[in-house]
Length: 318
Image 1 (cartoon, rainbow, N blue to C red):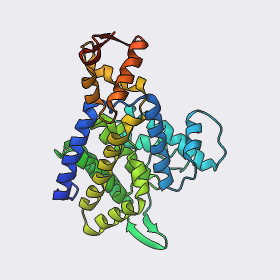
Image 2: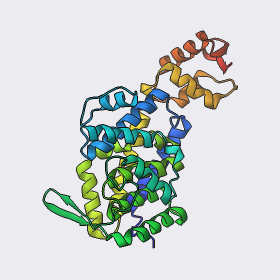
Image 3: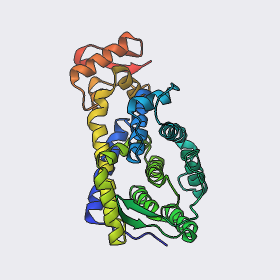
Image 4: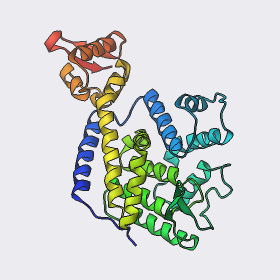
């Protein structure tokens, strides 16, 4: 059975804006960020997703764990981070459309934290906020058919993955298939689904914005629960995705070094001649002077060759 939601005008507007931003990202090759930036975003993703669940480790501590350094902190917090690093670093080994792969990811994410890692819960649960029960999850006897329906929707529905990933995230939180780890699995799996369709999302820390808007996140879940459909949650999550992409387009070029930009541009330029104007089209956030310095750096380091001077200068990768 297909999950309940409506394609509102707000959803259509957000999808159009996101699609345009993805086009800009692809045109400027920001979907292949340099290794240092990928690592930084991955650390921010893990930190944000786990902090939402109460993890106390800092960005620096998570970075140290990723570098195989010893960190002092609560044992379970360290284990949560170690597990998350292992899962996020092997996203390409997971099949976003497979329920078995989904359970395997949960097993790794919650290994050593709960006894039933990777297995559907066998008891009833309620989700509390403070002293108030906000949501009673479906009984355990319904979990397998509900999850089968949800993955059937992923595999066969014709909606855009932008929408389907939001629907999956909401439905997973509603079904609450595991004793623990449902929130982090919802965010992980949405990242995986989006990354399968749009490579930029593999390293774009959407979880960071969700953490910063955590109250709105839970409110969108609750309002969708009350309405009996996920439309409100889809609108919220698409707005988060759009904000993430806008942030990437606004600041990522500035954070790149001249060597990073040269290496990224090589993908599109290949062995063809290009001008400084061509180079600037790929990096809209830099000035003409910065573009000139980049090209001078590349010439002096033997990365590209130059023909002509000033306005007639043309360049080509060696």
